Length: 435
Image (cartoon, rainbow, N blue to C red):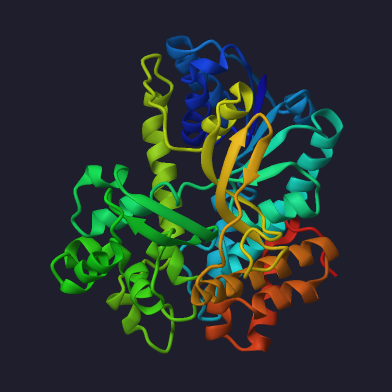
């Protein structure tokens, strides 16, 4: 069995995903192929994983800068690339929109930042797909890259890959909610819940205690009581949406704020303070992570490095597929009729069974109509961005941006078109030619 990791220079994430696999005894002996275009970061991950392997496992690890050699014969391909990095591309995604008064928090999933992040990632995805169809056509493509719905939807619908998109927002949804409201830490492991929707905007549709009692009334009471105000400061947007639309959603408030037209508004700057919205949060994180990497590098490369299996889905998927011991995950897949009141072409996030037959999504009941309606505002952007990647027409890029909830709430049609043109020019070589 062979796992190929694309973007292996993401050393900490490679530690989690591949370290988890090394710590899975039922996988036995297997091959790991690390691929990256940055030889220095690739070498760091190679040394780090070898140290984990010597301590915990029996994998055979190799590193590559040749894509086809890395993919040759792979059974599972993990995608963790970031095209363009922090500089220049992430900086561009934030600084150019600021000239138009358009502010963002994360900019990697929706909005103007998410659209252009997808457009510059798409040519690299196409290279991956061409190589996979040639040297590992049966491999399962495990996508961890944002914008999740655009990349996974494009990979399946347009590139013909056997793919599933993976995120950790579902695993941490209930835990995060309980943390804001003072529930005991171990309660998260005792409750029953149901989550479905789209990536970063899936809905906690049901949450019950061990006796089967609905916990939402008490959750909402605590949220409104003021008793937990300090613990809720980082998550006020999600709590507000829960009260307005009835359900808590999976991704954090800093993300949620820019998927909607209600919170980041230049005409109402007081909302930023009221809801504690961290504008420019992702660039700050990038700077912090770069600084921390320089400090962590020696520790990560230590022969005494430790690892504990994480909650990332990848190793559990691989284990279930290899051993035929089923597991349940939440994955991003093409909708079809999985969620009846969302578009068939949409990429949705639903429960999936995994065994030797692969990833098998579970059909869900229709979402509450208000939740489906909010999802559709995001899906509109995702589908138009995928169409733009297919046609290479700027007109389709403009339309994706015209439909974005946050962008359209702040800018006129002419401003949105001009902003897109400015981003095409600023990104330069990072984007293919759009006519």
